[in-house]
Length: 70
Image 1 (cartoon, one colour):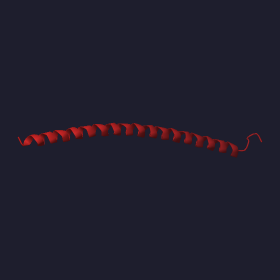
Image 2: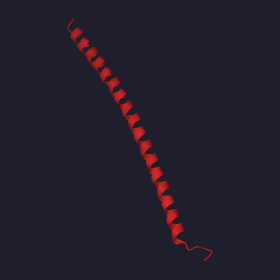
Image 3: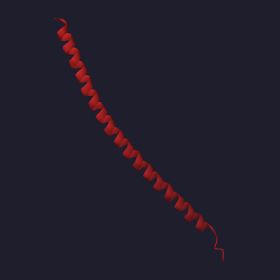
């Protein structure tokens, strides 16, 4: 039965591959969740920055205009 060690080694290799695949999927899932949180936070901050910039533009435009009743 010289083929028995080969089959056992192949089964061990497949088991190890399966364990590594499961761990990799878990790590990738965590990475995807973290990347999603970072993207959401960045988009929120960019939106706030755009709103502040628009408010400043409106304020500067109001200061530049001359009063209408003078």
